[in-house]
Length: 333
Figure 1 (tube, rainbow, N blue to C red):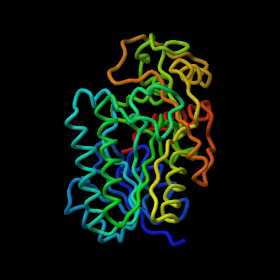
Figure 2 (cartoon, rainbow, N blue to C red):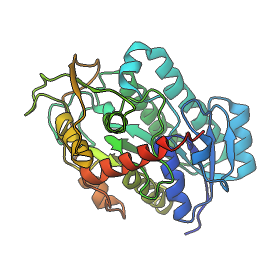
Figure 3 (spheres, rainbow, N blue to C red):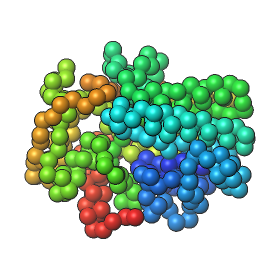
């Protein structure tokens, strides 16, 4: 199968940069667009063409698609903080939904054949049952989830009218870092639990807040399905392979390990690595946080030529901690 050049939007960000590494490792030609609002240029390999700009800028995107001969897009660019989406909903509909509309329109006009979209478990809202299946009701409870679901719908409708296929990968909680130390989560005001926890573990924070201890779970804290970022990146490459082999079909998959861990269980894993317990401070619930999100991942395992390599919380935490210690040695900017 011939491998087209892949444009990775948000390729200087956390998950996008790992997808760039995975694509490179698998022999795909890659180009990156990122506006660097949250990304870091230096975590993109030097030999990957990089274009700084906004995916909502049609003239800019049209030029990149044309000049780079793009045949497929992995779309990661967007805003991702759930509580912020509740506070600034219009920003999320602009950055996620409207910007995605512009990107999809440009892709259709340029004849791009495959679009792989970075979606989220937040499209399900507060599910009535777990594990969550792909066909379960989509009832997002925050603007972040709603903005992603709108983009999924746009892709579905557009692919029915135009000659491209799409994949939507619904992430659960992504964590960890490249095992080779090439990339990781740098973060500007990070809110992800494991990132915040390892920052506290290396002394960047005095404590960690636990948002809610009265959820209907065994220990009262939220339960999430954590997936190693390098396993997720490998799933993207496998999904792109699938789209290329099945040009008349679309793909919607949950991306998780099918098992959940509570906030306290994750913090215990961090403490095991450092033998120095992080100070824990109980706080109020955050807006838009459902009690439990765990993936039913049978479709992922049955559809793609993919198996997780790092499906262990101690490995996830260990790689995140190694990356955080690397950041202490000097800024990556």
